[in-house]
Length: 104
Image (cartoon, rainbow, N blue to C red):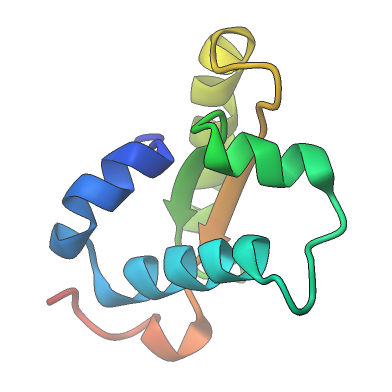
């Protein structure tokens, strides 16, 4: 498990699993939507200033997901104060339809 920055995903995201790229792209589109603005200004600023940290974990109905989430939270706790003024952790969880599929 590792945490990622927006800039890292922007640069290396093509090597990530499809569902991860899709989740991140939807998140970015939601925060950048001008017609339906995202209401959390600090969240938008954190995203655009590369202050957010992103993690990915399995389907939340599985036992492994809780271990993965705990690991991500621990990692984030170690770097949270260094990530910027608008820091937050964003964790995307595997959609159920991908649960039994092997990564490409």
